[in-house]
Image 1 (tube, one colour):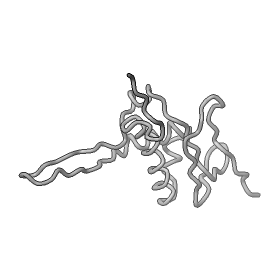
Image 2 (cartoon, one colour):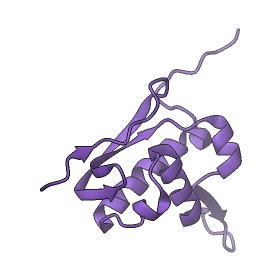
Image 3 (cartoon, one colour):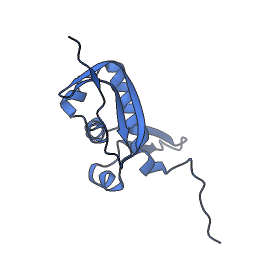
Image 4 (cartoon, helix red, strand yellow):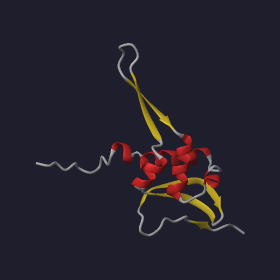
Length: 126
């Protein structure tokens, strides 16, 4: 007998910001999950957990400034679990390509607090 695919849903009053299709089903207590839906993060969560990606700028001996991106993997997993409502232990069993795709989606979702929403025009006062 096959397990029916289930969706781990977010509360009705919270909108989704990304959906990550999985290459193979993820086994959960509720059944097999075929896609992970991430909800939009809240500002208080950002203050609690912090950024996933830290940008480090360096300037070596008069050379042009270089930027390096450092990903905090523990924060990444906390965010993934929080935004998907799936336990970290379950997420750790993801196929590597699914983990990569989930990581990209989480970084994009959380980076809105760092870079702002680039899709909305800025209002000007004056």
